[in-house]
Amino acid sequence: MYPGDNEFNEPEEARPASMKERMTELAAPLLEQVDRAKEEMNVEKQKQGMRDRYDRLRRYMQQEGTAVILFLIWIGINVALWIEHAILYWNEPNFFVTIARGFGQTLNFNCALILLPVSRNLLTFLRGTFLHYVVPFDYNITFHRRVAWAIAYATAGHGVAHYFNYNLQDAPYTFAWATLAGVTGNLLTLIIVAMYSTAIDSIKRRYFNMFWFTHHLFIVFFILLLLHGPNFWIWFIAPGAIYLVERVMREWRGKQSTSVHSIIKHPSDVIEIRMKKKSFKYKPGQYLFLNCPHLSFYEWHPFTISSAPHEDFVSCHIRCVGKWTKGLRDYIAPPEEGELVMGKSRDPAGKRMIRIDGPFGAASEEVFEYKVLMLVGAGIGVTPFASVLKALYHRKTTGAKCKVEKVHFFWSARDVRAFEWFQVLLRDLELAMSESGERFLTINIYLTARMKEEQIQELVAKEAEGDVDSLTALESRTNFGRPNFERIMTDLRDDNPGKKVGVFFCGPRVLAKSLRELSRTLSAKHKADGAKFVFMKENF
Image 1 (cartoon, rainbow, N blue to C red):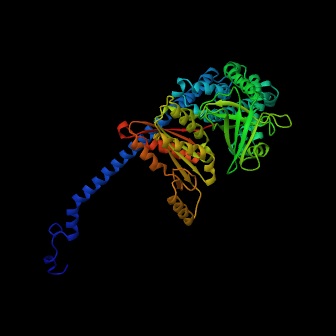
Image 2 (image 1 turned 90 degrees about the horizontal axis):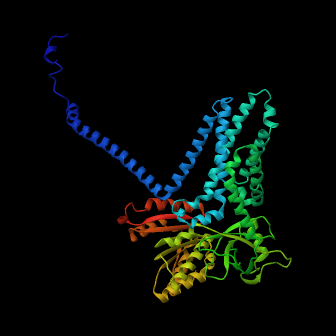
Image 3 (image 1 turned 90 degrees about the vertical axis):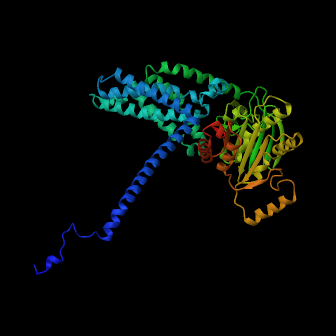
């Protein structure tokens, strides 16, 4: 240490604070406030996220609540049956048998249940009862597929468990291939593989006959199942009897004479078949199955009925896109656009030209239960709403009881000539409303095909010169592009407080998914806040 150093070295405590330290001391309370604010924001963000999730769940349950409850009941029954039978055969003679028995009991239940969702006559009858308020009958095909998947998983569990059990025996191959249970079980598995692989949508559309014949292996399937499971008959007897009556009715109705009144060839490769059948009584929005023996005696296809009950014929509009529909067009339709009047039931070779079965219930039947309707058709998906609009017009003009006050009709198509399919109907409705002064229907046409800017400007210029749309010859103007359904449905919600708006759709799945979601998210929470949307889609 050098002399004089003590003069310049003050104790640490006595040294004055630096500017940085002083700023830190002053900023500390502010930083604490910022941290508290961030923490409060995070807590609020978490609370808002929980509120949003709850709101989505609430809206989902409002739309799909009954379907979810019935689905959970079905799951609960399956679990209960598995547990009950596993306990009954607990470790007898080993744990693998316990597992197999549990899955076997769920197979008894589901293999009998799978027949009911495709008993269309039964569902059509039940739709006309109070049960349609409780049971979502429009999900019948979806539920049929869910049950089918349950059968597939239960078959895998049942079969694998039995093979492990066989492996513990002295003669495993004898158990698997030389006993009635083993042989029938293996054959049932092969049939399931064949039926399921051809039921894939892409294969079903392209090779329908393959799908039809493999799916009708269900007859062999149930015979083998009755041999395989000694107690299955107890589960099968009631659904089997219902389905047998169903098939007998369909065969009987299919053999009744159907006269082809006329065939109309429309633009965009669409044909309209007008038929007459004495015993055929139907409601607006229903559908039928159509068969052409000239093409295939066994091939039946579903089509929406486009005529209305007050008309003296029943009609279907068919877009010719596949092998069967193109074959039908070539067999029965005129070569050029226009109408061909026939008035006969058999072709020159003596074969029946057309057979029809039905009618069967569909979602569009329920349009008359709402005061405000939103009908959305995409392309040929407009056909059920042609029937509905005709029936509504008839009820309005004849003074019949009709709950519907306002209809918002939306039709989108890529081809401008597609709008000619129902141009006469829509024009008649516009004229009738002009004469009566009752504007119960708004028509919204959307052309979704891409057009050049100069083409659009030319069309707009033409419209300015006339009183009707230059493309459709309707008073309602054509819109270009896709509909903004979020904005449209928001306006409908705000304009109809306290009401239920029935949203009915027929068209592609992508748009159906979008409209279903919008119906959930845009429905008002309280009546005073606006309308509630109820979404329904056509399902065959």
